Structure formats: C-alpha cells, structure tokens
Image (cartoon, rainbow, N blue to C red; front, side, top):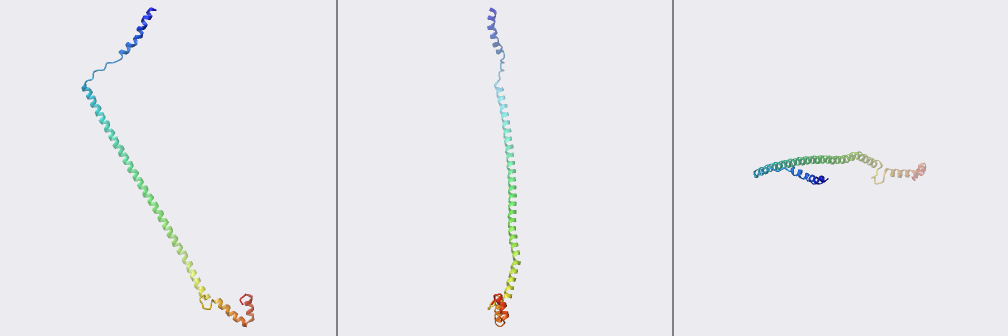
Length: 162
C-alpha cells in the first residue's frame, strides 16, 4: 500500500508533463516577412475597397435607373390622367351644347304654333277692334234684334245672354 501512496503523486503529475509537450514553438519571423505580409494585406484591402467602390457605383446606377423608370411611369400616368380628364370635360361641354341645341330646336316649332294661334285668334276674334271682340259685337247685335223678335229674345234669355 505504501507503493500506492508513492505512485499516486507521480501519476497525478503525469498529465502536467503531457500538456507541456503539446505546445509548439513558433518559428522566428523576420522583419522582412512581416513587411511583406503587411504589404499583401494592404494590397488585399485596396482590392476590397475597390470592390466596395464598384459595388456602390453599381448600386447607385441601379437606383438611378429605377428612379428614371419611376419618373417615366409617373409622367405616363399624369399624361393618361390629363387625357382622361380633358375627354371628360369635352364630353360635358358637348352634353351642355346638345342640351341647349335640343331645347332650342324643340321650342322653335312650339313658338311658331303659338304665334300662329295668336295671329288666328286676333284675326278671327278681332281682339284689337275699338268696339270689342267679334263675340261681344255679335251678342250686342243679337240683343238689338231681340228687341224686335220675341222668339230670338226667348232663346237669348234661355242662355242668359239677355
């Protein structure tokens, strides 16, 4: 058992020795190699910067193209809306013109008939005669005749003209 007690501390130190062997010694890098590596990194950074600049230019170009396309669409839409609005205004003006024309053409024959009726009434009834209308003069004449003719007087009384 004594051996176990002696070997136990040795075995516990054994893992420490293995870990020390796992570390590699880095080779010595010279200043020239460091400068060359830095130069390579700078070159790669310049290439990356150039790619980013190219990508920015490409994206800007795409945005400009998209902006131009959208402006053309809006311009086309404005033109279409203006055309439709103008057509609507023209239709409204044409409708008002048609209404006015229809009203005049519909009223002209009616006005002509009213004028003819007015002329016929003035001519037939003598509305402008100084002694009165034809009907008034006719009734006055029949009343004068009724003074001499009793039968005519009876007829005029039956119609309440005497």
